[in-house]
Image (cartoon, rainbow, N blue to C red; front, side, top):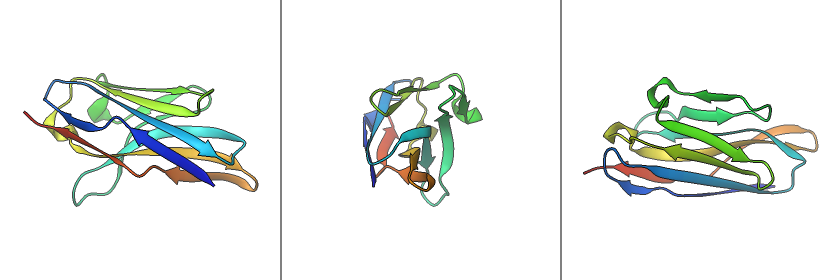
Length: 119
C-alpha cells in the first residue's frame, strides 16, 4: 500500500503565503506524477498543479505565477509553494501521487488539508 501524509495548511490573510508538503511512503518501485488538486464546497476536485517524473510542471490558469510545485525525489515528497493567496484559493487541498507497483501504476490521494484565506 501507499500512504500520503500532507502538512502545511491553515489560515492566512490575503496576500500571504503557505507551503504545503506531501510525503509518500509504502510499497512502490517509483513515482511517476505528483501533484495537488483542490476542492471547493459543492464542487468537483480540480487540478492545481502537477509535476511529472520527467520534470514537467503543469498549472491551473488561476494559480500561474503565484503557486510553484516542486518535488524531492529522494524523499518522495512534493511541495506546493503558494504566494499572493486570494480568498478564492480557500479550499481543501489534496495531494496526488501516481506510484509504480507490481502490476502497473496506480493513483493515490492524501487525506486533504484545509487552506483558508481570510482577513
